Image 1 (cartoon, helix red, strand yellow):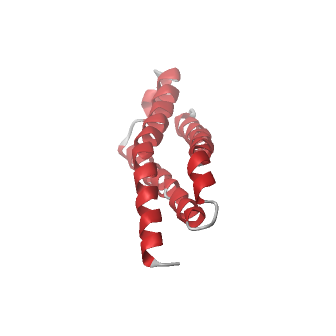
Image 2: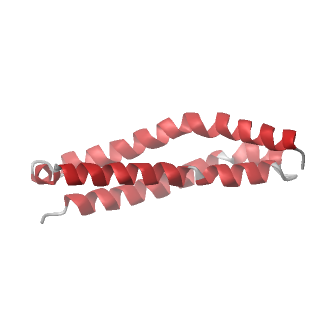
Length: 115
């Protein structure tokens, strides 16, 4: 494996995944807002500095988890399956988005549960 191959794979991964990070974060934000407003006005009690900080931590962790796609993407791109992978890696995005969406929903509903 030469350095150029790693560089090309990393550049391709960044070009693919970073625009989708915006979609990922938008979908997760939408899930939080929907859960909040579906439980409104009872959910108002959950608004505090502590819940905001906790939400910030979860947001950072969700974006760290998103970076796991880079490990898989670069590894597969450097294999003999690069061309097939580049056609179907959108499935990894959708599966990861669905998984993150379910986790986001559970965490949000847990935060908004009545005290």
